[in-house]
Length: 328
View 1 (cartoon, rainbow, N blue to C red):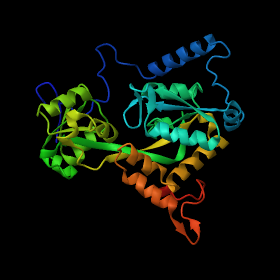
View 2 (cartoon, rainbow, N blue to C red; view 1 turned 120 degrees about the vertical axis):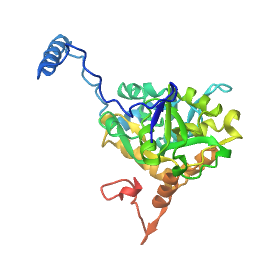
View 3 (cartoon, one colour; view 1 turned 90 degrees about the vertical axis):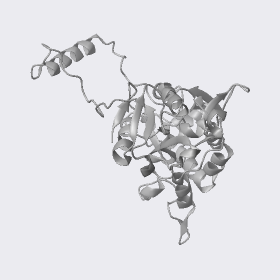
View 4 (tube, one colour; view 1 turned 30 degrees about the vertical axis):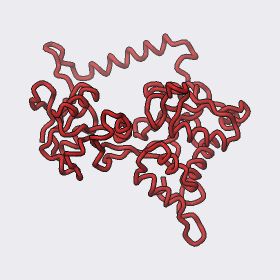
């Protein structure tokens, strides 16, 4: 098992965690900490009183939205099927804009979509330029202090491969000792190399990795399943390539609201809408409509939220302290 670089496909260390110190630059014990603290104190004394204060949240975000009569939802504008700007109509289309329309209708207000790139999402939410994000946001521990992840989740994405149909891959163990292209520094490179024995060729970008796949230098391209599904709509890949393996390393996606809205009636209203999306089958219908393979994650939660035992819903009427973990 190795991870290789593009330069002649020579072996390199799996991960470098730090940089070696330059000669004469060895830090003395405590020196870095004292310097950081002194600079921090100086910076704080120079701040105007209002700088650095979080923007005050409305006393009641849901009532503010209803009074305004508009729900502003941030969606992606560059991810086909999920949220993208259609050049023919100049409108943002996809599964997530459709979910935003349903949410606005439930709240009885008009919808305003704001198309965003990944790097913009958190800033727009923090500055309250959007009320809600439905924008392929994966729930990761580092984001939870900066965003309110509304439960239950509505999707989960993972890692899979794009490969020629002729390769005949059917299980992850088939990648052992096979050359698999990926982009440099992708988090999934190491797990696939260690667990499944693939020879990972870490190239500069996904574009370079795809070129290596088409040229036959690699047997497969390792990437997120969401992006692979989009690639398979491209005539360049549609007929000769496939995503043959089930996704691994699943990360759930959440509808997101401002961190100050945690525990608010807005969170409760959004959560109730997601529950209804499962109970009414909206998520699977939209995935079918947009040609997105319905993941087991969605099917399992749809079945759980629809399940009744002794005249009661197994997951409860909505999300609460007693909601089983598998429903979330």
